[in-house]
Each structure stands twice: as structure tokens, then as C-alpha cells.
Image 1: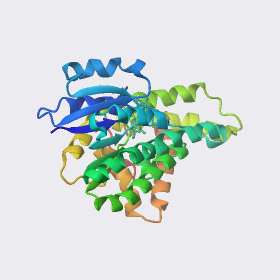
Image 2: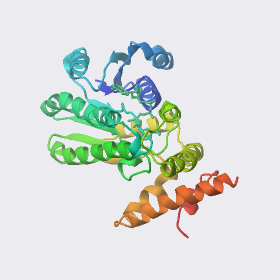
Image 3: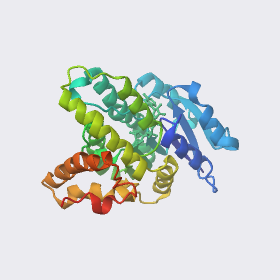
Image 4: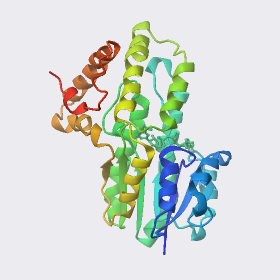
Length: 309
Ligand code: NAD
């Protein structure tokens, strides 16, 4: 029988692509419940799903921040059984810490961390009873190492990494697997929404030096990173499809080979200094190159450029 896959955050980006790819599985191994907070935004998903809609793909409402919405969604799934849960819904938050509200920070944790916890708690009893299941979490390379001006977002992904690594030990006993998928930059609405947020925000209480570093160093560097090593949501979805079809899924899976050198810095130097110093150089030196018009990372050759000289 096909496995029921429940995915959060399918109105756009990685969630939408994943839902469509699974629903079009040539062997029809999946019954996809593609969920989104606002059903008014289901047009793009339905168009991409094509004839899979109503066959191997159903669209349902689900706000990961609401207990009622989660209960309502699960009650509509036949038999209430979810074989694979994909925690994909997420929001970003970028900017100087002094200029961000605590409410905005709490929203990041409510969505990215507690949203996933809420869903897992809801599907886990069934998975445990059936002694099988797979929980996939769309984390980020920012769940492995911090990134400047993304402190709260990175913290929410670190929280997911710690939570699910801990849970994975117990769940092996129930034949339930956990996979943390860690994309680098992905070219989706995510970055667009963030930049929009940033361009309208005035970051009160932030000193001029910090604002200068954020606007004139971080923002251009971030745009360039997305441009040079950004992956498509299709590519990330493909990696997740592979993970879901694997008989022994890994605990962690990065998706972007061009980002690996950066992600490896922590393992190379457990003291953390190499990563912090390299990120610092990358931000402040590379941006200077960029301002001079020497787009040294334009070819994506992170591999040689990031190493401190
Ligand atoms: P996206 O903005 O297109 O997708 C995020 C989805 O989550 C949206 O559809 C949004 O509506 C949904 N969402 C937000 N709050 C929700 C809520 N309360 N309930 C239900 N859905 C909600 O961006 P994306 O890049 O496809 O992001 C998907 C996941 O990938 C996120 O968890 C994000 O943190 C992660 N990620 C993204 C990148 C990137 O560079 N884009 C990199 C690494 C990880």
C-alpha cells in the first residue's frame, strides 16, 4: 500500500516541489497530504500537481502554530495514519539583534521549532503503535553553524538539531527514523520575503556601525551567496525524495556540495575559531572585493577562496 506522507508549508518553495515530486512517483509509492496554512494560496501547488491532484495528492489546511489546526488536519486523514512526516514549514528572521522585536523572535521559534514539535507529538503515538515511521525535518546548514545577522533563525534550527538527534535514539527502538535535511542557500520566496522585510524595517536602537555592516556588507554578501551557490527547490526536493525512499535513512543529510567546505570548518577545528574567523574574513574581505567589482566568488569556487591566507 502507498505510504501516507504529510508535508507542512506546501504553498511554495521546497514543500511545494517535494509534494509534487512524491505525488508523481512513477511507482505510485506515496499518498501525499500537502498542507498549508492558507488554502487561498493553493493555486500554484494545484497547477504543478496536475492530474495527481485528487489521486496521489490531497491539499489540506494546516497551521503548525495551532493545536486545533493540527488535530483537525490529522482527523481528516484516512485512518489517521501518517507514515512519513515532513516538517518543512519555516520562517526566517534577519537583521541586527538590537533592532528586532522579541515578538518576531518568538514567532520564529513558534513556527520553526514548536511547530515541528507539535506535529511530531501528534503523529508519534500512531507511529509507535505501528512500530514504523519516518520523520523528516527541513533544518538548514544554519542548524550546524551560526551565520551573522541570522542569530535567532540559526538558534531555531540548532534547537531542531538537538531535539531530533536526542529523539532519534529512543525512536530507533520503535523502528522510527529521523532525518535532518540541511540545505545551504535555496532560491525560493524565503530570501525574497526576508529582503522585503529588511527593506521596510528601520531597526530602531541599532548603532550606525552595526547598520552599516548589515546593509553594506552582509546584504550584498548574502545576495551574492544565493546567486553563486544557491540551489533550486527542485534539487533540494530530489534529495528529500531519495531520503524518504531509503530503507535506512541517515540522521543528517546536507543537500549542497558547494557549501560543504564551509560546513566542514567546524569538524576541522572543534574549538570553533576557524569557522568564526573564516566567516569574518568572508564577510568583510570578500565584500570589499565585491565592491571593487572583482566577483571572486562568482564561479562558486568557495572551496579555495574561503580558506584564510
Ligand atoms: P518558503 O517561504 O517558500 O516556504 C516556507 C513555507 O512555510 C511557506 O509556504 C510558508 O507559508 C510556510 N509557513 C510559514 N509559517 C507557517 C505556519 N505557521 N504553518 C504552516 N506553514 C507555514 O521557503 P522555503 O525555502 O521553501 O522553506 C522551506 C524550509 O526550508 C524552511 O523550514 C526553511 O527554514 C528551510 N530552508 C530554507 C533555505 C533557503 O535558503 N530558502 C535554506 C535552508 C533551509
